Image (cartoon, rainbow over the protein chains, first blue to last red):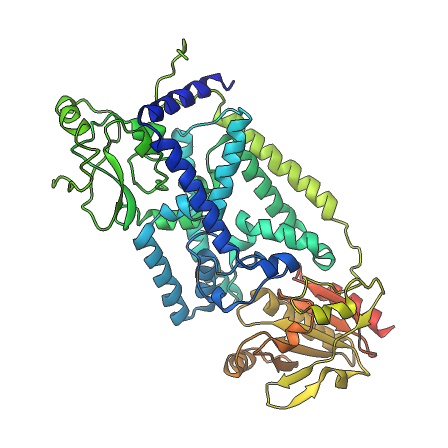
Length: 337
Length: 206
């Protein structure tokens, strides 16, 4: 079953080998950054040791990625949780505070946060590694996954509407996404319940539902790359809106690009163009680009196009001009359209 | 390394997404049934109230690890919203429901009608509501909108909460007339807490 997939993997690896050590090195580097970020999110070692939820003042600040406030190791707040809390409390200052924080993270990094600084994304990357190591068949993106990826906008709607609607109907705003969906919160939830007999006597249907959902996502992550991020994450949906103009992102040099489509083909997210709303800026496309047209950019750049599909336009000319100088010419400004 | 079966780019290969979807659905249902079986009917009493673990080792040492059916509630100084002070031990002689809450905690606020009903249904039960970390103005605003007949306590520096083995709220204890903790509840049930509170209060009154 897995044969055909592996042959694609080999081909992909072959391509990155042609590019030199860059691909493998940069991928390992990303995982190191992810690991470091996950540690930074969980610096409350005392909380982990005593299995208790800390009350440090730093919890008044949002971490950039999805990360449950109730995690014993957490030193900061989850932006999705804080957003729901701001809506539930209908407090204008808190709304501005959380909204401003989210705008700042979005404008700075967009979904670069998903690819590099989200502990739950890191967890799924590692589960994916296990799945590949076990030679499980991988289901790649296709029409089904592109359709399913719209579901995360529904989750974003739930994040916003949940507290507002419950506030109107019950006079008590509730974080419905946290309660019924968020698998990142289920992880510490299991740990806390396991550590506390008094919590064990309290768990009911909701606990069963959330643990089942987490298990289902973990199983899914063995076969499908990052299922939560692609189909369910409201934070990814929100940050995706910033992907086109945030400061840290991958950009395509349209002069060097030949529209060969290798980047979109190599990408395991539901990306149609490098850097679109689904892009988590992991850089896999960079290592497969034979023309050096993709690079990580810092700062404000003009919006540039990248190939949606192989196109047979003026490719020949682009190959000649783009392939050779691209490496040493990092500072070349993008073509003005 | 040369492959005889080269697959064109952009095609989903091998296993069908429907099969994965089916596997995931089966896992979801099986896990739900399994976990419900494991945790459901788990009405076992958690007699010691080693709740969610405490950061203050000293307070925990008094009662952690005790398998006794009840243990003494740590005595604390209560700063009432009206500015006065009293000891928790002043409430000895009647049953007390001690509940930790905050205005930002919807699940704490949901317990309040149940607590109020208990104080109406069981004579002589006092409800002491300890707010966690918020200032007097915030609590007074809440009290104005929610006129429950409780003893409202401020705990801006978490001194009271630190004396109890909890860090998460809602956290509600039922304390008998001798000052012993009969039962502690971490978190709350979606179906409401009245029956749990009532059972604990009845036990405390025995």
